[in-house]
Length: 336
Image (cartoon, rainbow, N blue to C red):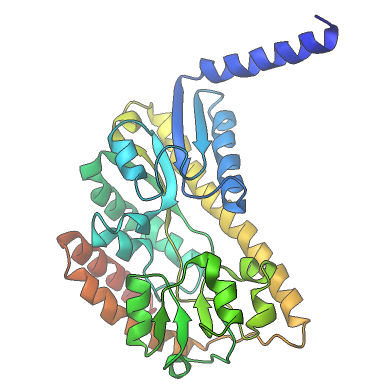
């Protein structure tokens, strides 16, 4: 064995031993693919846990579909195959409509800080733990990405402009709200949004954040984006097995809790920076017109959305609890 081979082998042994030496080794699965920016920020969080805990906790973060489908990680934790997940809460709406309502309260939030304030200080944290209790899952904390932006081929300046609009939107609450606003929602997978716009199948789309839309060339064919977005902001939750959480010393529980708040700040800031750069680039293009809805129009849309939240609230006792909690918070903060 030459010196170089010996060094590489020794480093590998040390790294491996270090992971094995952790007091607590956890397997988490993400709902994002490995190449996605979201996953990279999540991976950085998992790696930081090792440093923050002095190597006492090691988290192996796996991309979407590594073990379970994105809609099944809650079951994976309950069965003890996964220790935790980083995912969009609304993926579990098939288990209880409450998860869809709290996971993406369409029209509720105009800024990431509003959702995070609700989760951390407005009752959302306690409610999520109550919803997850039957599954043996502990909600460590919440995050999000960014308020999603419209892409549109026609000017959209308010609720009135949604009437008759052929709009791509995901099934469920999102489509319900847009239908109630007078739009004509169309079912299209995300992979077909660009083609649908270019061929005239749709005139607009609820897709993702502004920077991602811009990078993928959406604004080259849909030159009337709405930004800042306001209609869709997903709750991203970081959760783990309640049994394994209870086995952790209090200092490690505290570190995990605070680390998730740091993670939320990290990912929302990075995505906001990306959006700001993309908006600046778009504004320099004379072919693109960015539309920013007034506070009055946003409240009109939120009022329409509230009617659909109420419909969902009748579908389970938990959904009613979510509805009551959310509407009280929004009313107390002048958002409804």
